[in-house]
Length: 262
Image (cartoon, rainbow, N blue to C red; front, top):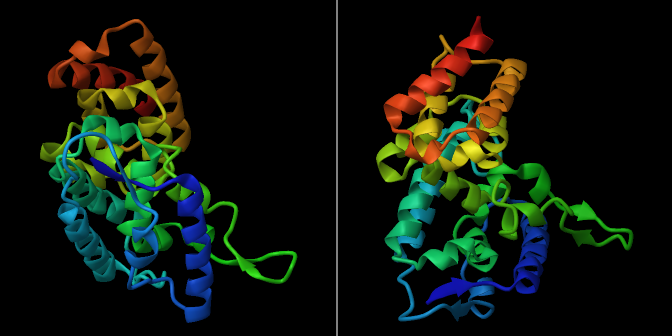
């Protein structure tokens, strides 16, 4: 069995947290357990999974952010997306480490639990505009309408812990997790060219893409990269990409990449 947070419960907790952060003048909440505990349901079969790996990942991720930027949003020059890539390795290993059943990975309620109980502080640092309080028409403090997409588990390319997990899974799992932080200023690269498209379903292709975009000698700017992505996705329609090994994927990507870099 795995933890699950209903949508209404999760968003109610999120709303109150935004007000709490406003009152306290800080984007960091020390306690992410008390306000979620009563709302958590357990679903699936068997015994309850051990969430200790997620608790450890929470500490690792917050320590990582502190070493690069302050959790209050003050950056020290670090690339926030590369920090997210490093943190993604912790999320992936933790989720896999719980021994959770595969069906849970398709359950938005599980990702709402991860977002609120373990990754909230990181998400608030990573998406500060969405986590900033707004003033409602009544004059009261409320959460931004933009907040939900980052914590409600419904959009894989937006929900913070889910997109982090998928970044590593798209690469082929833990052995390749170092590549999750390889591309500088890679927010659009991962969202638009990996997580939202069919190419992202094939790890050898993703690895070939990442290695080229991470290398300053072969990196493509925005427009050539978008044209490359269009050509790649058209090409994959006529192939069986699942059978491509690393060498074949690298050759395919290299041929299309070269057209944009010349």
